[in-house]
Length: 143
Image (cartoon, rainbow, N blue to C red; front, top):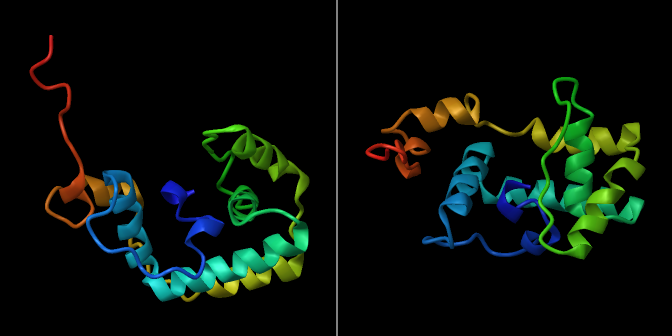
């Protein structure tokens, strides 16, 4: 869920300023910037929220359901820090998006300008924006 960015918590809030709390949030914020910036991301959250409200769930659940519907996706990896997260995640399989839901989400995503390439390729470019925040060779020098 993009380090928590794809959640109700970030809906209609000001763009976070650096430094962010951890490298994971920095990484996902770079993806948001590549996606189209904070305003387009807010439009996506508002759209996900409208769909979520229709189904009685949260933004993260709708995001997971949408991703699972993509033909190249077999599973989503979700975190559950507490019982509420676990219960919300259990509801993913109970939601069925309809054509209108899909069309609303797709319309926002169609405005996206990136990221250009898969995340792993972006991270391998050690001099690029994404790769420059990564830690490499963490096991170097260990026996």
